Length: 171
Image (cartoon, rainbow, N blue to C red; front, side):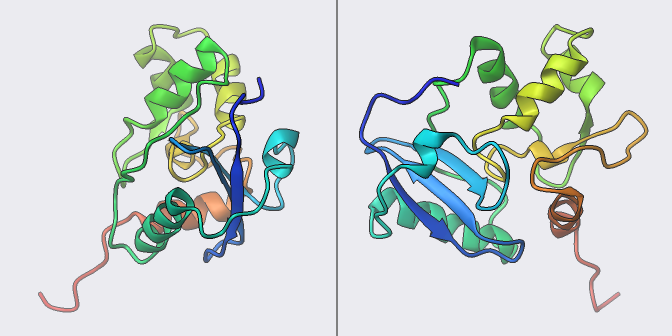
């Protein structure tokens, strides 16, 4: 993964599933990782702290709303151009998976016109730089089973359950 060539800013955001490391530049959010996950790019970990950056504040507010079930879609400028062309295609496809729905790795590969690229697709998903915002947690096994998630299976399960409709107390 290439290093963005612009000044970066970062902060940590609390969430019900652990701290999130958020990284942006002046124009767009370029990272949202679980603070304790492996393989956070060095450039993201080295970004200077700026909790007051307006874009980071906006991202925190939208994540808070998501976890409170007040938001289904994120309205943030995103930059993941530092990935490869294939990663970019996969990450863009993740953004089209609707809230509360899942898709299998095979179905996602097929939607990209690359039905035999399931393994490289899985690798690209694992390198998703914008966890939750680009909803890789919505990608499941062909039989609907929960498979791999960089943030851990407990977090994937939590996110999928969070997105399910709540039962009404009234008939």
